[in-house]
Amino acid sequence: MARSPVAMRLRAGLAGALLLAIAGCASTHTGANDFQVTNKSDLFEFRVGTIDHFTMSQTYAWWNPDSAAVVRQESDIRDGAASVEIRDVEGLVVHSKNLNEKGTVTTAAGKPGMWSVKITLDKATGSVDLEVRGK
Image (cartoon, rainbow, N blue to C red):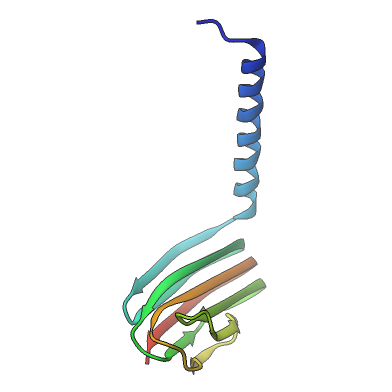
């Protein structure tokens, strides 16, 4: 079956655009090793052993049966930015911090249910260690 020259050019153009898009994504995420996410009722953990100028933003749905949570942050970000934002089932921000702020804190009170944990890394270098438990 013969293909028209227009269809062949369109196909080649789409293939080229796809290749450029893939190449652009690869250059944004230069490196992340030892990536681990634990997401179960009453416990959320996000750990990355080594990141090198890594950029990402991901929101996780997390079931918290309690009205507050205990957040332990032990990250070591040497360059770039890293943050966490936790919202309760109604969208109320109960915790928002730079991930380089080490320590254990209790979130503000919220409603039990499906909370969200948003991790944002912007050209971050170092390691990430975050744990969130129901209180």
